Amino acid sequence: MSLSKGNINDQLAAQNVHPRLQKMHIQKRLQALENNPEAPKPTIDFSTAEALAFGTLLEDGFDIRLSGQDSGRGTFSQRHALLTDQDVEGRTVVPLNQLAAQDPGRGKLEIVNSPLSEYSVMGFELGFSYMTSRTCLVLWEAQFGDFVNTAQVIVDHFLVSGQFKWPTFQSGLVLLLPHGLDGAGPEHSSCRIERFLQAANEPWLFGDRSTQVGFEGENISKADENGKNEEPERIGNLHAENDA
Image (cartoon, rainbow, N blue to C red; front, side, top):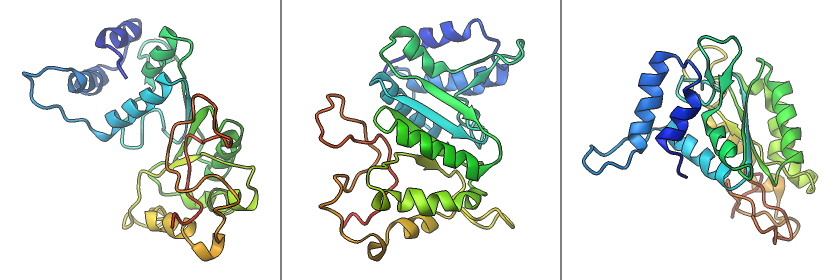
């Protein structure tokens, strides 16, 4: 993916971005991506790597929908995928959507800052992923990963086992759980990653269905651009079976 410094600055020129973000986030990220052999080796942090990954999908024509609590900013104020004008009330810009502005054939990034209602929001995103599994990467992000347990029904009944029960319902919903640790106090330790791995990796629960469904050992992947697959590939996937 290539999006020049000039293109980004042109898009942001008419928008008064917070000066701290301009200095500590935008310029720092652009400097890390510059190809300057004389400069020190740049450090690509997680949020920059995420933005680059999003950009490759957008360039290939796939849409991305990121929903959750403070998703535009990021739980740790690391993402800033959506920037707010400091002068004009309600005016925002998504820099990565400059790709689609240059070429209508490219995908768009939709940022949704959702209410603190994990069960309902994750359920909506699940349904959205069913309808757009070939064209859109759908992500739901918890706020610090603490309260994902309030949406446990969606995880257990649909994400973990839904495709086995209803093979035609193939969800590519990806969960982003920024916490993943315990020890932060009551109701702040429900997002330990082993809970999800144990729920989704029990062969006795799912059995051998290698001859039933054509998706085996699938990680996050891009859809087949040529559409030649007999079964549509999903852009994202939460494993519901043992790869063995």
